[in-house]
Amino acid sequence: MDYMQRHRKELSQGIKDAIPIATGYFAVSFSLGIAAKHAGLSAWQGFFVSALNNASAGEYVGFVLIAADASYFEMALMTLITNARYFLMSCALSQKLSPTTPLRHRLLLGYDITDEIFGISIARKGFLDPYYTYGAMIPAIPGWAIGTACGIIAGNVLPVRLVSALSVALYGMFLAIIIPPAKTNRVIAVLIAISFAASYFANILPALSGITDGTRTILLTVLISAAAAIVKPIKQEEPANDTQ
Image 1 (cartoon, one colour):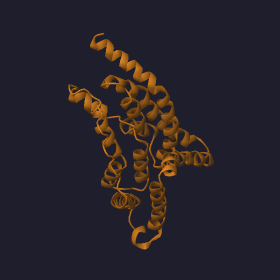
Image 2 (spheres, one colour; image 1 turned 90 degrees about the vertical axis):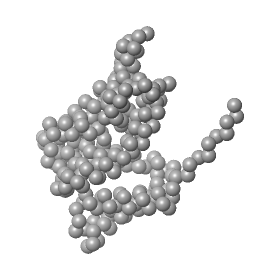
Image 3 (cartoon, rainbow, N blue to C red; image 1 turned 180 degrees about the horizontal axis):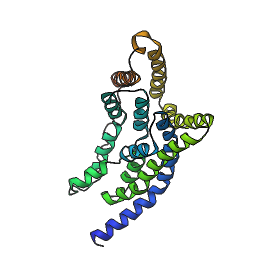
Image 4 (cartoon, helix red, strand yellow; image 1 turned 30 degrees about the horizontal axis):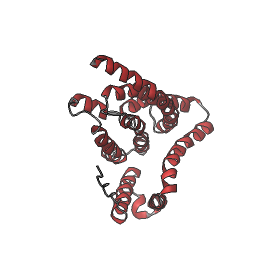
């Protein structure tokens, strides 16, 4: 099998594997579109934001900061912090690529390393063919962007009470993210509780309530995560003995 045939096969397999991901993205980003509507974005603006920034938490933070009239610096810094985990995913995925993989492919892959696309890409046997991940992006990116646009459109035509009810779905998504690890890791559970309490008190204390929502979020994120890293650092596992 020549290179072009192999690339086409990997591209087709990536598209097939990502169809369930795309349907899930549509459902989640629909709720994200409700948040974008509250921030004053049009359907086209929401579409292009999601097409260029395929990250649920990062986009949600961006929409919240837009609604709060945050500065560009606050938005850039908070988005960087929120999406920092993708640096680690990119580093891990780079180890799956052949050493001869050109830089252009590495840069293109870095454009859309989401949790789900990373999961199916890292699970491939042997070296990762970039065209497999490109195939996964083909349904995933439009699913995410179209879902956001549809959420904004629905937010403009549906009754206010129904829009308010739909916006709760986004918080449900975040609960679905934090509850499973909190049930298995007591440290994470405690940190979540501390984060909730700190966010509440930061919103009512005179010394902190006067600053913008974006700045408060940045301060709490950095301080709590740094304190957790110092108090409860993640222990590295001992390397297994080589028995061969």
